[in-house]
Length: 284
Ligand SMILES: Nc1ncnc2c1ncn2[C@@H]1O[C@H](COP(=O)(O)OP(=O)(O)OP(=O)(O)O)[C@@H](O)[C@H]1O
Ligand SMILES: O=P(O)(O)OC[C@H]1O[C@H](OP(=O)(O)OP(=O)(O)O)[C@H](O)[C@@H]1O
Ligand SMILES: [Mg+2]
Image: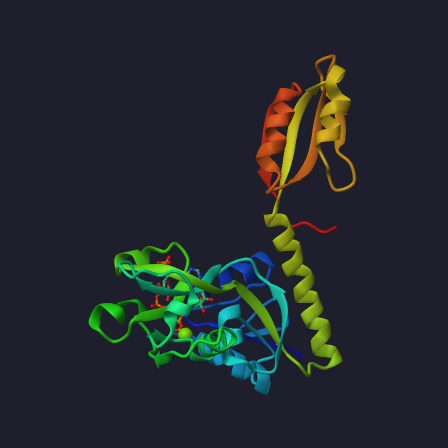
């Protein structure tokens, strides 16, 4: 028994999808132009496909699992379950208008022609806001549409905003925020579910590790309690005596988000020789 996983053949999600599998300890041979491969050390077969097709394949059971953006899951609207957010491919789907346009709110989209590759999501957004506009579906290079007179506004993915900027557009409305997700067929049997659980266990350990750092520091014993109180740790920090009298080595795990604030407080409390090390896997 093997699970079949569909990932993007090439494009924004390809490399990170392969990297995630590697970090999960799954070896796949993804030679150039291969459209299908098997993991050598995990019950997984990998298909390389256009991302737009992945939700349909997962609904049909041609693939059991898929890695796609939430934007594609919403647009395709197939019967699949989203099992895990993967933390990469982060972007937003936004409406953008020409920089010179006087835009003050969604009502300004009324009667405009909007070019997009996301007609379903845009239609839904317009309906929810009671706006009547003309959706012009195109399959790529969306940002160029207003500049060549094809549309008055667009709806497309944005991350840095540089594509909008280069095409003389400005972001007007964020319709949704998206990242890559693992989707699964709704009818997995018990044996398939067991493999998925095994994969999910590894993905969660990799994700957790990415959000955390291992920290080591030297603390003067006379301020040890204060320094320990600043460090959460998985259970509680490890404290070891240093060879030099009056000092201890303190080890702990810190969340990336709290990181800089805590480092500053630690320094202020007399901590020295602070080392911060990435964690490869983290199992709680
Ligand atoms: N600029 C971006 N920054 C971050 N993530 C992005 C960005 N653009 C797209 N993505 C995410 O990556 C996914 C794939 O984007 P890509 O541009 O490679 O799609 P595509 O051109 O439709 O590829 P395909 O050839 O597979 O159909 C998008 O659906 C989205 O979830
Ligand atoms: O805000 P930015 O950082 O500029 O990113 C946004 C651009 O990225 C995506 O296209 P991509 O570069 O993946 O090319 P594509 O047209 O081949 O999908 C998206 O369709 C936007 O055009
Ligand atoms: Mg596509």
